[in-house]
Length: 119
Image (cartoon, rainbow, N blue to C red; front, side, top):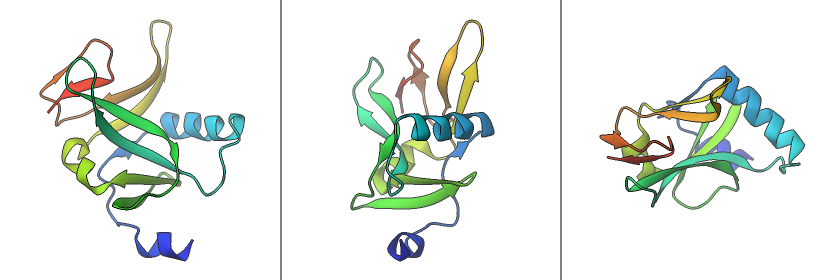
């Protein structure tokens, strides 16, 4: 754990709302996610617009930056920050929409699915 603290970056490139943090804590408990797993925020190639978001629990990998956002330990591959800087992850629970949403100021276009974007 000391290694993680030494590598923690002071300013997180993304924001996670209170409702998203609450939902992520519930998922961690329901799915019995190990305590040494972090929330991974990132991107991967694919989707209808070029990139899709990655949001899930994972172990620390090489080239990860570490953050604490609203009390939640978060990791992100250093190379993904260029695509995600300033993004907000939220969780909505409405009549017409339920799930995580990504408000990304770096996206030049998005798909109707809400999880695919171009930068």
